[in-house]
Length: 405
Ligand code: HEM
Image 1 (cartoon, helix red, strand yellow):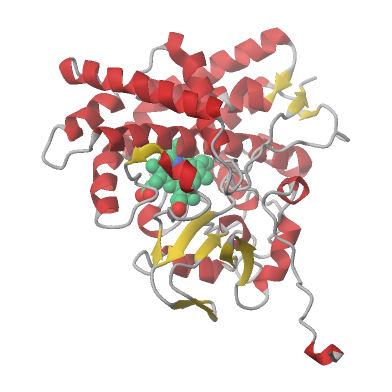
Image 2 (cartoon, helix red, strand yellow):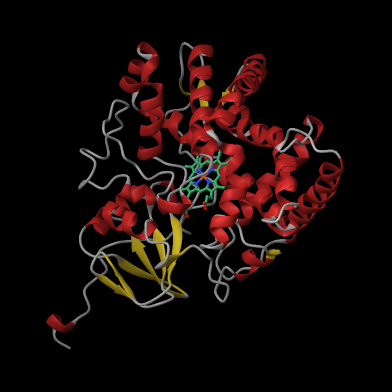
């Protein structure tokens, strides 16, 4: 064979199950901005949609790009774990429209604002505990417990249940890391079973004696004509744990790491606290909690000049879009004054994150509480190799130890 006929060497590397790739996926996105989406082979071809314009066009066309996870492939066991009830995240219209209407009413801006004093109080108590201990791991001391406590309160889970609830939440998140084609481990299945048994009882209790919590509101919705089925209700609780906890946790962790590595931006924020809102947006853009989401083509189609056959899966890489040089000037620069900053960290279109307002509020409360509490913050061991949790899709640190004096 002549050299001219030889297949071109692959000009990119993309392996979400490689720890080194996960630790810093950003350099691997660079080749993906040149030309049409590439494909990788994950038992079947999966297209890598990375350019901002392509990501947006896919997310805005829910008819062509389905959110329903394919069942006949590697993800089968993950899908089976909670029977077949669809979640709002993994459904298409008209199912999505119905579920979204039912579950979004407790996430209105007014309802979120009402939560602020309580979120501040929880953050203060968590930092009091860390101060008494004399060391500060952003993840263990604040970023992990804060969102899970807020969701637990919204669901009406009593404080004595938090450790159990946190354990279930961790297991739900772990299920996301199971390699394609591998069965879900037994301890994760057990956690799902306990979580579902707990909420099955709670659902019955709230039906008899409704309270001001989200489960009661969902049970009420369940009992109207547009009902949520018991399975859907349970799926929503699980989704809140996965979509609502781990993500906000990682906003706080990834955001604090960015501030530690860009001291000028940290000082600027300390001097001008009114920049906090913009700083949170830049944290979401620069190193967002959700690297990628997933879609499947419902028909033969084309994305960014690449023809895709019906049923082709695609990674819609939000974090790559957020660093696309065609949209963001000096995208690798962390700049809390960046404007405009039209990132897609919360997605786009009909699945745009229901919890965006809550996540922004929790992020703002967490950062203002940390910066007020600690006039001095730096990495405890600047030379240490930081370890990321197992999921490529939900990017976050295991620990982030800071020196506070
Ligand atoms: C910084 C934190 C967060 C980030 C980065 C984030 C990101 C996202 C993204 C990218 C999507 C769309 C996924 C897709 O189109 O496939 C999404 C959907 C969703 N998020 Fe979030 N999220 C965060 C926090 C939260 C919170 C706090 C909650 C709730 C308490 C939440 C609940 C949801 C729900 C229910 C959906 C599904 C919406 C739908 O499919 O219509 N998220 N989120």
